[in-house]
Image (tube, rainbow over all chains, first blue to last red; front, top):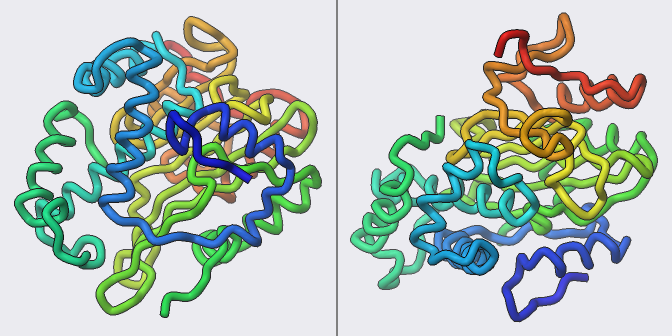
Amino acid sequence: MKTEGAEGKFDKNLVVEGSKAMDYNPHEIIACEESEQTITSELENVERILASRFTMPVSRLRRELPRLLRSEQVAEDETISRWLFLFTAAMEWAEESARGGPGPPEEEPSADLSVEGSQEAAALFLCPFRNASLN
Amino acid sequence: MAPRLSAVDLFNLLYPGTVSRLERYGGRWLEPLINPCPEVTYSVSGELSRVSMALRRELDDKTVIQIACRAKRNGSVWADCHYLSFHCGPDKMAMDEVWFRIDKESVGGFHCHIRGHGPDPVKGGHIDIHHVEGPKGSPSLLSIDPSSFLDLVDLFLSNRQIPIKKKPGR
């Protein structure tokens, strides 16, 4: 099945290899537990891949990509679709953390998942897309 | 200890009948290009509280469908899907080429891609869902779920006509 690559877990070519493998069976794929950390880490991976593709820094990518998508200048391929999923999930986590609940299950305390850290994450994810809405 | 739930278990829990309906098409499973491994969270009391999951199936050599969604439990009801992506396309290895796709996410909102639209017609453009209509008598696209998406796929397979279209004048 899929292997970890130098460019990150969601490198398009690796995903394609997974599809080619023809041994994917959703009856046997066991769910793993999601956390804010796993989402933001995967989001960063995908953003690095996209930033490299569009030859722009990640901060600019976050500003530009929504506009490029809405104006149909960029098509939603699988990497961008993955980014859209991760961004939506990260925003949801950040909003819940900023709200202080009911939100996701409590995590082991750590610097990254502290209330302050989560509020910073919320600000980070919400600011570039003030018009974006989860509803 | 949390139960070991498969992608199929999760779909059967949230959208009963979806997996068996997909398997009735024949074809074969492919690894989803979003959420190849489903992800879940549990509430403090240990109940399943959120699910992200996807299924991708090749129906024939011109049709691949992928159903991806993220749902959260609100009391006893699974609802509040902040993310969904119902894809029907010709390419088993990619998502940018479409027959049609209905997406909902926080950046692009609720929108559709319909083959024939946009600067590159195979990519389907980016059309606000309010500017798109389904077949006469079908439920609103705003309430689309895996079952109603598969109804659209059935229509597509029956006549190879894309079952959703941009509203006139939009």
